[in-house]
Amino acid sequence: MSHLPDKGVWTKCPACGGHVNQLEWGSIKKCPQCGSYQRLTIKERLTITIDDGSFEPISMLPNSDNLLKVAGYSEKLAEARKKTEITEAITVGTGSIDNKQCAIGIMDSHFMMGTLNTTVGDRIKQLYLFAEEKRIPLILMIASGGARMQEGIFSLLQMNTILAAKQQYDRCHQVSISVLTDPTMGGVSASFAFKNDIVVAEDQAQIGFAGPRVIQATSQEQLPKDFQQASQLFAHGLIDDRIRREDLRDYLGKLLTLHQR
Ligand SMILES: [Zn+2]
Image (tube, rainbow, N blue to C red; front, side, top):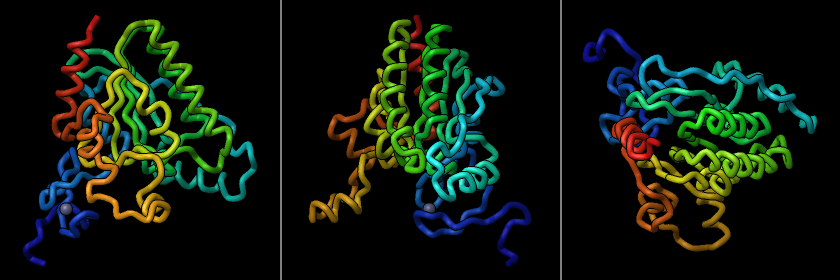
């Protein structure tokens, strides 16, 4: 193994299977061999998105868990919290990009696939209300498999709650931006993900409602290669733009500057 560097861990790229040293992934986590992006944690996303040290979290405790008393759910939550070291699938707060202040919510697919539950819904609602009070722009970086099954109807109700909060936020006439990252699916794509004033997607993100396997099995049709990809959504006019991860910070900085008021 003399060809390996002394430092760093080697991991296999999930897309191309190539062996990549951890140093080669870089902060944007892009495979140097095939160019595919790895999914990011909230911490990694913050590092590449906002000005150093500018993030101030809005501290919120999780809601009472497992209202429906679903077997095994409490254990799953505890396990997710231990694994990810975050309390729920979203962190909300304020920060600046290019010295422009904004409210920001970042979802994490590593926490129960970023699914929407009562706590996630509550946090997004609070973020809108906070941003309205401060009269600042708002950015939501979405990564979610949809509504969380274990909280049933309570998860689905969040779709509406968030839309009502967004409507209230509109009274302060500041811009709101969705950044759809991989994955943006299910009840999340069917509600608030597409409701912000500007909706852009990170390149390579999968965005849709039901997954391709379900659609293929139901429709019995061969799906195109780029099905549910950011590129396809952009080509069909469903999103305003698609951005490479390495350009995202500058892009958001420009949007905030253009919409400053
Ligand atoms: Zn690769």
